Amino acid sequence: MTKYIVQGGHPLFGEVHISGAKNAAVAIIPAALLVDGVCRIENIPQISDVTALLKILEQLGASVRFLTTSSVEIDCSHITTTQVSQELAHKIRASYYLIGALLGRFGEAQVSMPGGCNFGGVRPIDQHVKGFVAMGAEVHEGDYIFARAKDGRMKGASVYLDVVSVGATMNIMMAAALADGVTTIENAAKEPHIVDLANFLNSMGADIKGAGTDTIRIYGVDQLHSGSYAIIPDQIEAGTYMAAVAATGGQILVRGIIPKHMDCITAKLQEMGVEIEEQDDTLLVRRSGKLMRTNIKTLPYPGFPTDMQPQITTVLSLAEGTSMVTEGVWDNRYRYAGELLRMGAQIRVEGRTAVVEGVKKLTGASVQAYDLRAGAAMVIAALAAEGTSEITNVQYIERGYEDIVQKLCDIGARIECVECEEPAPPQRQIG
Ligand code: EPU
Image (cartoon, rainbow, N blue to C red; front, top):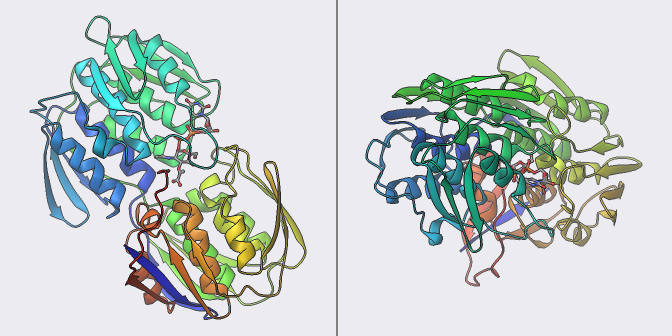
């Protein structure tokens, strides 16, 4: 077990290079199961969710070979089983993508249910199941999900999603890539990682059109072939470093990003008085003056991302005036607010809305990471706070942020990762 010790109150200066997108990688790695050949995947982030998914693929019979730390070859020509062991699948939420990928390629899958109650509410997968059933699968849900295509191969179908779901959109896309006929997903999610998965599958021979709009058509093909693909940069990792400099002050160059993906975050930070200049694949982010209040509502892309809500709320806790943050995607994602109160923030949560009264300063404290993004928020708060903070449960942070301690040290943060004796209490996985 490790924890972070942070000496706060130091502005950030320098350059940070953004890694491959976690939420694209955790779909694209399972999608390699659809390929009867070798996929070379570049720009893979070194995070624990990726390590766990690659282990699962190996257990299913895939051969996995790293060419560099961020480039991997996955050969799924000789898969030996469609049953995923509970031990690993349970650790990551994204293990649900194994269902769509295995169903799509082999017509059957057995995967243990991904971690249940996490942001304080349930995370259902009914829309994923609705899609599989429409495509001719029988699905039994319990501790495990058993899914089987009635005739051994998925069949194209029309699926209207009742809620805009990233996971259901990607899972149905995978199940449909090798189906017999055309699948249409209406009310599809439009996040950059949806487009990335479609581009990955198309580069291996799939025929997917409309990804990035709310109607996606997947024309089933008989086989996918070997190919090579580079994952997009992580919008949320970039947004997190931008929020960090907004909170601490200073100036950083965020490198290796797609600025268009950042528009929803950039616009809000600018309203708060952060100066941001776009140059090719970089953003120069500077905060020298006061932070100003604003209101934010999280929405599916291109709205403000829910995965930036804890980080931006932390920044707003230091802004002048009262801000309202409304969570429009998850029922409850404010568990971290109690930790911020311990650092001197003034936040009142009323249902899906947090009312944030800006304070002049935060003060260092011992806090814990409740989940991945809540953990990122704790890091930002600790960097901005006066004095020393200790953050426990950092394994959640490392599920989604490559080398965060080193990247922060490189821009002048005083943060170190140290061993801690007490194991943290068990928590559910999210992400
Ligand atoms: N929903 C349903 N039924 C479903 C699926 C979703 O009602 O079958 C609801 C959810 O309860 C939620 C909303 O639809 O209220 C959106 O859920 P979505 O399916 O889009 O979320 P997800 O696919 O489970 C991914 C990311 C999350 C991110 C959300 C929203 C992965 C592995 N996870 O989750 O990322 O918050 O999309 O953008 O891609 C994170 O990275 O920290 C993280 C939590």
